[in-house]
Amino acid sequence: MTNVTGTFAVIQLNRLGDLIQSHQTVKDLKRQHPNVVVKLIAREEFYKPLSFLLKEAFDDIILIKRDDLLRQAGDNLQEFIDGINKLLAEPRLQNIDVIINQSFCQSSNYLTTLIPAKHRLGTHINSFNQVVVSDQWSQLVYSMVMGGPNCPFHLVDIFKNQFGIKERKIWDDAQRHVGEDQTLALQILEASKVVRGAL
Image (cartoon, rainbow, N blue to C red; front, side, top):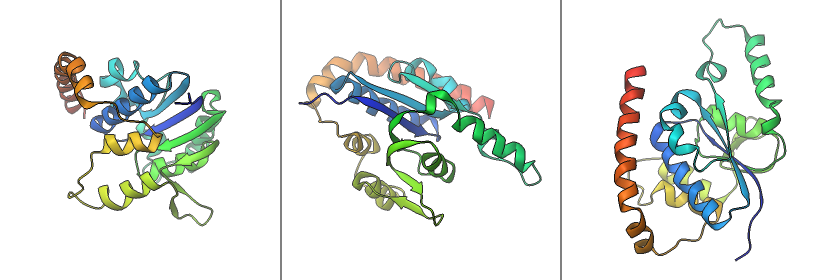
């Protein structure tokens, strides 16, 4: 097995459960390829309750405030553009080898397009302002998973394939992590209560 190196950036702007799925994917990626650097681009309000979990998998975390992405009609457009340009000039968002959009929302589509990277996975926008999905695993998510509730695939498994992660024996992993998973489930439940109270 060759050891992959490089810098990956994962855009995950959606809910707590989506961040947990991205966390599990990156954790397995780093187990197979420990020299990979993986950065997370996430919304601040979803990151905070899960920071204890996300810090263990991601090498760097770039937080975006909701107001930086979503403006109300009548807001100052120039301030919004200046904010986006400031984000794009962030030194931690430079020299990205692969950017992966795991959110599949309009904001993440544009960020995936605007952040400089050698390769893009997931949805992004082309020069005709159309959504583009070039890799096969993202095409599967975009066409089946995003299209309705009857998808037989788990998103974590699809995300792992998007990264090219080889599966280990399920029983080995399950036996090692049963205790961890029970503790983690309780922590996630508490974190979701905090978020619901804040919204």
